Image (cartoon, rainbow over all chains, first blue to last red; front, side):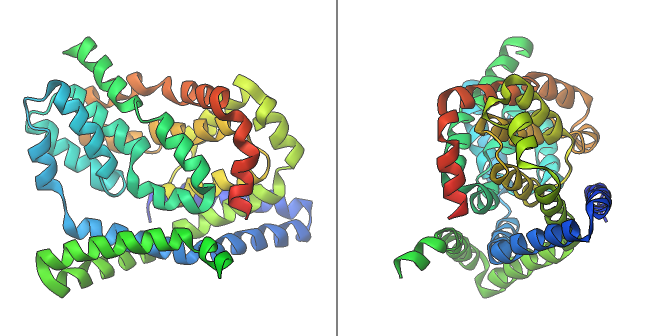
Length: 161
Length: 180
């Protein structure tokens, strides 16, 4: 069991105790709300995980290495932003890939752009965002953040070359 | 008919993505690869069920415990910089993937949180992420991790403020968009 699971269960239990203190009705309502969320989004989450499974099987690592090689500069930052959007999976999948790129000689700037873009602009994450936040929120959040990875890369170039 | 189509719009988009990826998988390794992707996805899903359960319970209890007035006061449209900083702190501390923090953000949204606050919450989750830092540190090393963290440190509050300033007024439409 991952540490995230343990921490989240601790939070859930603490919230449960608080609800319990407010009365059994509050506990019931909370559980009901959790169940409704599960029912409403169960199928969507199932579909999202199937997507994750396919992306893992297609393993685009080779492609990634080809795009931001050692000599990058501006083009490297642009490709890094684009790659970050396409990067699949959580930190356990993505950080090792980025580590391989860094070892292969990718500059600090594209690496930072890549991490930032994957963190905030990843397209795969949108399949989880849409059901809970709606398309309007998703469009605003995603477009507002579009330039951020490029800016971080640029700052990195200015600071560390 | 029209209604049900609208209700399943997101399902449809995801299904199309699956079909496209399925086609790529098929062209790479035939049905075996398609099956491998399918089973791989289900395996990850099953492994994440304990985490998903905890996330949905947390979101559910937040919804009933935290009073609407409280959210509106601390995280609503008029909460200003204070609300955005609070959201950054919350986002930075919460562990887990998108299927954890989006249900929680959704609960905050329906309880009356403002747009800037929600964007700050999601961005801080993705850029500050205290629970992810040890892993980043371990795999990518101190130089990359520290420089990456420093450069992106101000982004969650700034992005929250910018979005609130530009689009803050559309929060009610966003809320309707989800509740429909």
